[in-house]
Image (cartoon, rainbow, N blue to C red):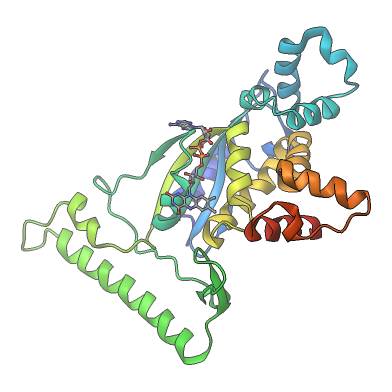
Length: 302
Ligand SMILES: Cc1cc2nc3c(=O)[nH]c(=O)nc-3n(C[C@H](O)[C@H](O)[C@H](O)COP(=O)(O)OP(=O)(O)OC[C@H]3O[C@@H](n4cnc5c(N)ncnc54)[C@H](O)[C@@H]3O)c2cc1C
């Protein structure tokens, strides 16, 4: 179960107690506050708090540009201008605090994003729940033959059954031993901080994660991308939906310039100019390596 009964009661109590405020409020985000959005088999993301909205980004930008912003007709235009020109600090004026429940191996990838504040569940202090990520059958895939850092086609038949069985039985055996080691019935009971070291990486942990919008966009650009591992991508996708409701203009600009746009090298730009003039450009006369050319073609094909 993604949420414990205590967490559900806490969310209901928080949602039943709205307070008036003079702070900037995003209607779209208010609808998400505290609610858990389920991710994977036991995980979730939920918004605990946030600061700012699209208007807060513009307000901060106007402090720095002053009269210069008069040339921009509306907030959305200004936000698109900021995104286009990598004027990032106004986006840092917005913040989000999420409660995330995620498998430990996903947390290891996530924690690499250093520009956030994290407070994690203590498995020294508390006992971890018997909750393990077991991939859905369509995600139980073979090693990719084209990408060392990825997966290929889904496992089938007897192999898929056997792998699922190994994942489940290993997880449960490790947890049985964890419980047996920490038990104080008829024995001293091993410290939780030591007993946890035997648990597999698919066990779930939880944390509060606070980040500003600029660095969140950076995280989403990397982790909502097709190159990211599926298990972190589904969290990034869930966050994208929340951000789209929170700061629709900023998210629209992010989607257009960062997610939908491409980062092209000088050589790639030169090739495009030559193509537009009608020249036949190939990898051999492009000045690009085979890998660069392949990625360039993929960008052009969309
Ligand atoms: C598809 C994919 C595959 C990956 N594979 C691997 C892998 O095989 N091995 C591996 O180790 N990692 C891997 N990573 C992690 C990756 O290298 C980054 O650590 C991670 O994406 C966090 O990015 P970041 O440092 O830009 O983010 P953040 O830590 O949030 O930093 C944001 C930006 O702040 C600046 N910054 C932050 N801290 C510093 C600092 N101390 N000094 C200078 N500038 C700083 C940088 O400009 C940085 O881009 C992978 C990531 C992805 C998306």
